[in-house]
Length: 135
Image 1 (cartoon, rainbow, N blue to C red):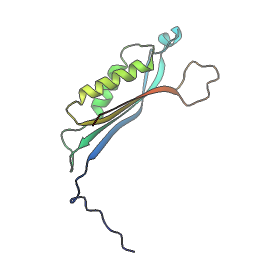
Image 2: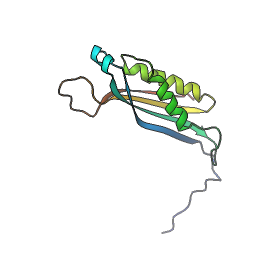
Image 3: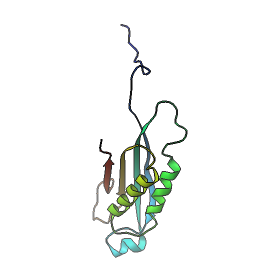
Image 4: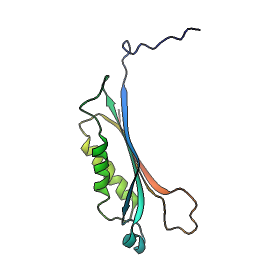
């Protein structure tokens, strides 16, 4: 049986690129308990940025990993009690840094792999925030 090839040139397509960093590790004073603010906690931050792209190779207008990582570093500089504060701060920074792009969606996930919960038996706890563009 012959397989028909798809003709990309004859079709108008909306391309969406996705750039992500998965589980970048940080150690910072974060948590509700005094001990957590003194000793700090390990947290993992993931972010995915989806944006519309033109057909062909991308050279200029794109999300770059270095900027994305720098934004992660910035939000971890301030002590906070809540993972939500870190997630919201990163979401705002990403949208501001890449506002010139046609953003479609941004997902930020902040995890605490070692929460101070007796007999904790899971990989991590955390929050995830997703922003999507309205069309």
